[in-house]
Image (cartoon, rainbow, N blue to C red; front, side):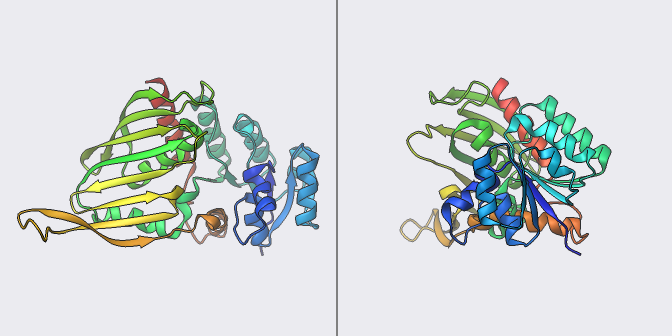
Length: 321
């Protein structure tokens, strides 16, 4: 029997990006559950958004109040509300008996609320996946395994570049660092970009010390002003190779060491591979992943509640250090 999935919050990532693009891409929560054929309902207080859902999925019920949606008892809920609403919506979903949730990032506005979410989820025994979408993309999953298995050798350093807030966009980069390299042990804020970000979510340069196996690896996050253009990349340099993820994660380049053909006493890096991860379907992969856990085919989501908490903990640590 297939579960019934619903979405609370039908803005950009909730539903409207798919309405705008009209391509084969799956860029939203509603689009993912709709593609899987199990979208049963949506809730959003803005009538225009509900009307767009009705046009795209005529059989899907729409509600202005998410409590009315929860009263229909869907099996899975995507929560794509503004971050300030995460805690009350999650608490209401758990109280309604929902036991599988896909939550947008960041998990909460601060660690106090995030801790409350973690405690409520654990008390209810629910399954929670967090939408750090690169966690679900097959080629990026392969990169995680390659780094873990030593393809790059001993990691020497990493440099990431991002814009538009350490929480909003920088948190995606921090999740990659946690996933690929390890937990952050120390942070030092170096500079704040003079953009239009609020004080609670600054765009900042940060130096991190990250624990990779038994080594401490220096990692630098370098911030840009998003008003000029979007930039999101991570460059990892190891003793046996280099990996560059760019174009928001849609372009990978790998290098390996070879003898220098001109100066025999030296070794150089030679590019050996290029790849193009498919972020245009990452939310579909996330929905499929949670569905597999719901069916008992996987033990836990690829990006867990604890992963989401760890990223928020790091952004808060970096912001206030």
